Image 1: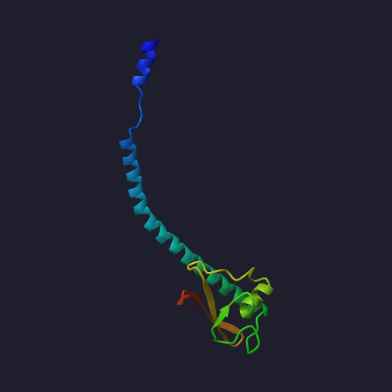
Image 2 (image 1 turned 180 degrees about the vertical axis):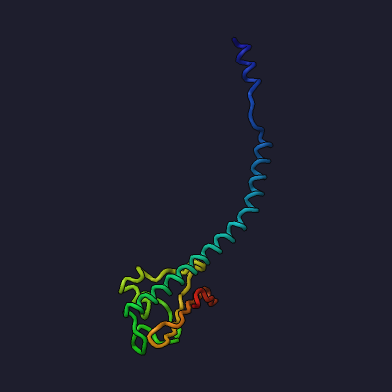
Length: 146
């Protein structure tokens, strides 16, 4: 009986410390190769979210204009062909939120802090062009221009 137990103890199988260290080193190397690629994908997806939000804001501006909920002119929602900041508390942003076209003005995802800038060009009774820019860390990028 004792011989059987001794034989089983000698036949223990497992990984040595050296083998475990080699596996951990290989996993570390693979992680260092994958992280930069993941960061690039993350930045591109944030940019895509900002572009989708800009298009959605433009569609809501057009919808509000057609419904007659936006007014152009001094002391109105916006001045024709004049760039203004889009905020929930003033101008077009306030009107879009108050009239339930937007729940709130979306935050810019591609930077830690940023602002939306909107220019609406009216041609008679129609909107000729809407330009939406994101200003992140002092850098301005046009996300919608149609």
